[in-house]
Picture 1 (cartoon, rainbow, N blue to C red):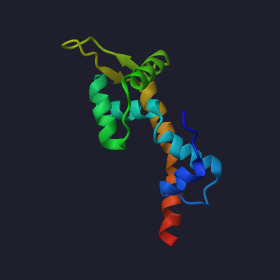
Picture 2 (cartoon, rainbow, N blue to C red):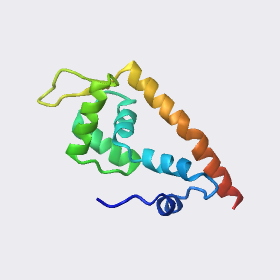
Picture 3 (tube, rainbow, N blue to C red):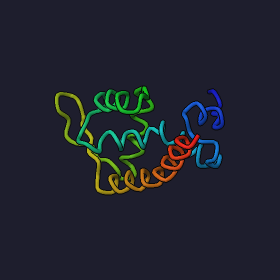
Length: 125
């Protein structure tokens, strides 16, 4: 597995050098975190696994393989953040729970100041 170089990745992603290493890492790591991506995908409605993979590819540009996706789904279900619904035509849709919605809101709220700061600093450059 390739190592993650935050400095290189954050610069490539346009994040300002003025953000701390920890802040830049948090933003970059979060943008590809499978659990966050699944929660964000389910925020606008129930979806089965393949629909989530397509949605995540469209809104985040991240291709999640089945192992990554279903590993995240398993963890999120165990934490009570999503719940599986009755299968429809052999496809099992999932729904964001109230706890999952709260977790997603909290995570996105934590990212907002970092992103806002980086964008403001880029405008000044």
